[in-house]
Image (cartoon, rainbow, N blue to C red; front, side, top):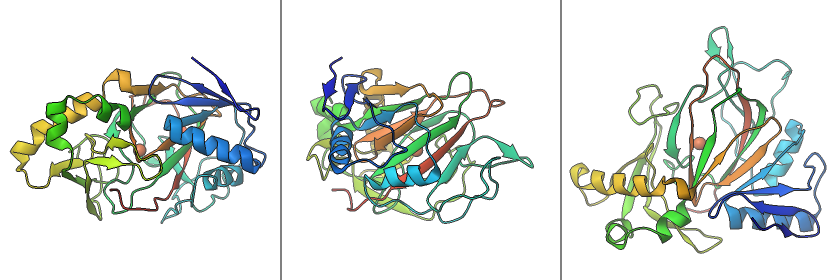
Length: 287
Ligand SMILES: [Fe+2]
């Protein structure tokens, strides 16, 4: 792997298509403008960027989020808080299986989760998501990131002709980790977006449908759409387009929701997992 040294930090690609580790930055200190510009470009180039061995306050986490755009707000404050959290900044969400009084303190507590794009079921989906790990299980729980660019660019032309130019329909029951698992609460919104999205900053085209949330294609019956969508999902999730992130405590990871999907592997239910999540709001409808 090549290392691109900027003089400020190093960008170390992790796979051929997606993922890079950024070395040499301590995010607990404000970054200068050149570094902010540099990590933004690395994010556009590599889709997923990872900063290891960070020790961040909630304020630090929010500040880093704002390097990439406007942070999203969480509607409801968390019902329970992990020990050590006597306050939670608006915009910080817990992803956790830790339970207090039998109820998970965080969202999406357990197990495996199918590939998806965050918030694709609303008109202006999130641009990016940041996860910061505080507690991780001893094994499992990797997050998988698939490059939508690589999937589009390598797609069989016959399949590409069936999906490119189509509008896809998306729906999500909050809390569901598998399509139709019945665990979620009913979504307040459905959305329709191009099945192949052109990224508004890079100009590249990416697969923009996913196994968890995409439910149909405009102009086609469910019976006609399903085999096309399944073929696209099977192609887009191939290991050669995927970076599998093995978490360590202190990882801050940011992904681009406009050109990648992500999934989670299973992990032992009895071991604690705690991550803090923030989002960068989208600025445009996908096109
Ligand atoms: Fe997600």
